[in-house]
Length: 536
Image (cartoon, rainbow, N blue to C red; front, top):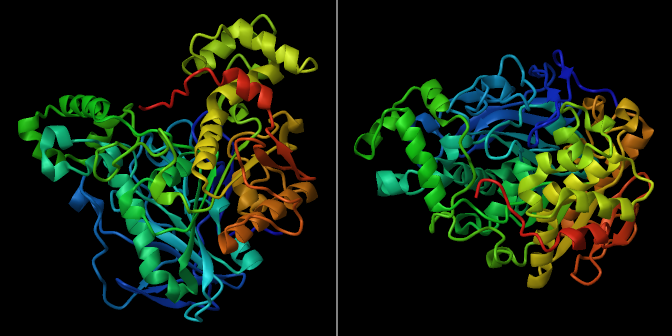
């Protein structure tokens, strides 16, 4: 496949943050040969055609949030005439500006940063044809703090052509703009402020419900999916009454959200923000008009996750059990085999050169909050017993992945199985050939594979025959799942549902296979430790 390029595209891979992707996307120009027009609930929009797929970018699904700061979003103001939607919309304000933190690549140079960020992008094979196509709605990672869908790795053309589906990707409020909980300090007016970003996602799904038939999609067959923070957003939506009935399948990739933030801790953070702005509960109303940059600076470094506020989010998403309101929604949960190679692989001194003597200290430094009082020397001894051929570097990434990045997914699978909900588990075991294969299967690797976009990520996946083969396997399973609620395809072995006895898991590799309870010894070793999700 030759990448579609409408401008310069820079590809980079920066490790060390939650779900930062590797691309800087080029800007598509409106195709000269075709300018499809669609009718939305707010007005008509004009897109372009890319390899036979109708594309609409930067479509408003909500009004400028600066006018409704810390409030629930509202639909966009209707417009007259036809609005051009041929380029990505603004990205939400976030630490580090356009580049986010050091963990995030830089989006296109012409991407604006604005509170007017409630836009989405649509790819579809046809308009107004009553096609009743499955709809795949993607929420980006970056935790709840940063990032954007304004990169080519999320391009929907390949999925549309491959499976006759409609693809939607969504930008929304982040960090304190979306999750600053002011209800205890500011009263009823700010009752929803701790979950404004999640309510943006609800509004985007309402837009899909009300408009997607125009784009040949089926509003009764909507799959939400996301990676890292995007997966956590999906898990949270599963417990939100306002989202009930707006989606019908869920796929989470290396992302889980067992608990939300407590009101007490969220209020403590809010007090710190007010103090930084020289505001008090009596003058809190002024926060609505603080300049965006000044407010961003005051919120820098805060913990930002959804808040269990008793109304918008009435309970923890997956604690003490899976959310009953979504019990009948088919769900796939998965992760990559070597998640933490992404997070720690470029730290210094390099974990790839670690010695056995250094290993216990490095494990403790990396994942102390996840291993409780287990001595790191005991962890090293257990892994050397389980995997005697592994190097110290192998053990570092295996142990930190099992303790930090894998357990939440396993717990969610267990709780779904206890509930009886249709649940499937996967683990990406295919190793990227980049840099001689040293990264193995790191966090974010499954994104371009599920999107079938390896041509856009040669610095991450390579774009050889094997990468394309794995991408075909994974994207076809996503399409099958979106269409039927079951990820089986002719190219995959039988994929049983996950249950607590066998724990069947699809291992995505050049030759895929199903294994019962993969890494079971590691799971049992860490099971006595209470999973400690950050941001609580």
